[in-house]
Length: 105
Length: 269
Image (cartoon, rainbow over all chains, first blue to last red; front, top):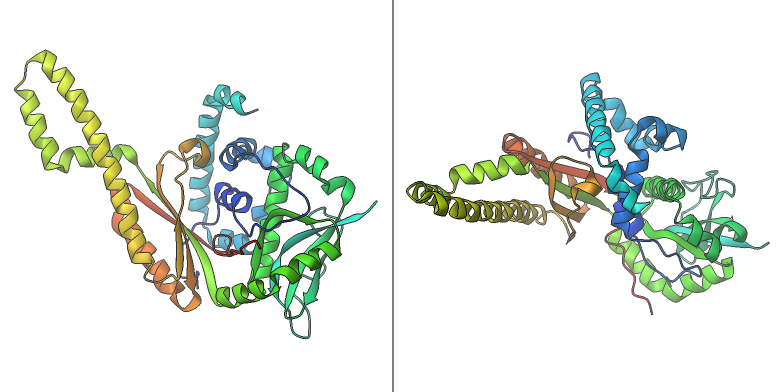
């Protein structure tokens, strides 16, 4: 179904926003107080901003997820290069904002 | 030490044969994921140790971002695997019972509702849409093409220096407001096209740049429950609109299919 349409594979933000916030809420026996999803997402995004760091903590789920993996296989080198540039840009931006991030730690 | 039960979701009871998630490790990376049938519907769960998933411990763990992201992605990954082969009611992250008996009580209490919900979700997929906008480009285009603004600019050019400054600032504000309106209109026009192909939809909050990490501003965020036979049409709209508007700074991102996180709802009795 989705094969003929170029859809973006889910980003970290997409997954966190949805998994932490949505799904059937039904009384479990254990109460889990998850803090504000927005704040959590920012914090986690800062952590995984560096690819090396991501690998270090086992955040290489996109390489093992069969759905995302098949998407990844479709990507050509050019897209990967672009992604690389994009990541570089983000890291620079995050480093710039590093002072700001202390607020959340 | 007692074993707790971590619930991923509910699916229709599988017929004879293998169920799709055999021999997968659960959230603690130790206990295997299991299936248990309750008259037509089944729970997908794994056991976890009380010492690791008790209330107090979890409270501490959810402050550990690395733990949260690892486990949240595990939860998502398992749900993605389940939904490949079965209609799924996805549970919220960290839905835990103190015993299989407690899980059973909960399922019994909601049995009919869950069965109905599975029937309702069958043959449908969740797709999410996020629209981003190059705000600078949009503001520029609004300033260039909005007739009111053009007129006002000409007026200002005739004014004294002092008034020019004041009026220019006012005009800048007006341009921003108009750009806001434009963003909203773009999103809702697209949304109106998409809901023709979905049976349910929800419009969500836009995240700011701190969250998305993008240069572009998020200006629309929504989720849709789309019947399988309409997915093609649904995505075609997004592909076409993306193509049409990419030069004017709009980026449309569709992701999916997702477990129906936004559309599986049960009323607590």
